[in-house]
Image (cartoon, rainbow, N blue to C red; front, side, top):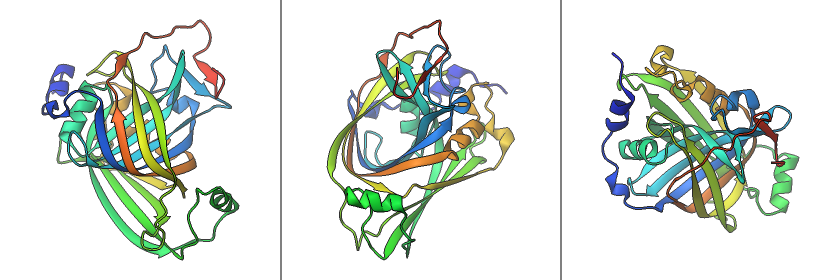
Length: 298
């Protein structure tokens, strides 16, 4: 039986607890940048927008966060970033898929922020493992104060994200496994310098919010480079992955290819305080030229 867009967007509980923006989230996160094939990223962005690319690639990746305090309480979030979109006078990230283990956060993301949000289960396990031999790149990061210390042990955090099928909550769509190494807390308490960072993003063009939107996440946190996480995925029931609509964000297959793309750098954000501003409607910028632009050259 087909489910209408209106029914899907109103089926979740009210997210009135979010109150007025800016919405504040506190916790920690892993922000990882990947080289994503332009043809993959272009499947997610609006046709009237330009993809920022070079040599057939754009910058994507993921943002894996654990919020201890937020308008929706404590919850986990995985934002898969398809790439960078150019819409004068600025460029912003575009989320391909957002997975959260909170019904309120999912509903708020869909209705208010125009995100392709879905409900998922998050399972985590941390264990101490021996440090591997350092590469020249990690040595350079240590020289500039961003690398891990010379601890003999490191913590490996395994996160399993299991997305739930929209039409059958008892079935799984896919499992996403993310394993990342961070210096052992008992041996390395240096969390990096405190910084302020602004991460602008585009959203919208979804069934629940058809407008093209722009919102900004203002972060204050401690940051340091860590070894890039290793992602692996497994489809549980490909037929259930397909929603009644033909929207790209309903099919996780393209999203998984973003996660499996080549990582460039991973940043650990600790003591994180993130303020998310109210989304603003963006007037699309139309151009007769090709819907692409070079990285760093608008």
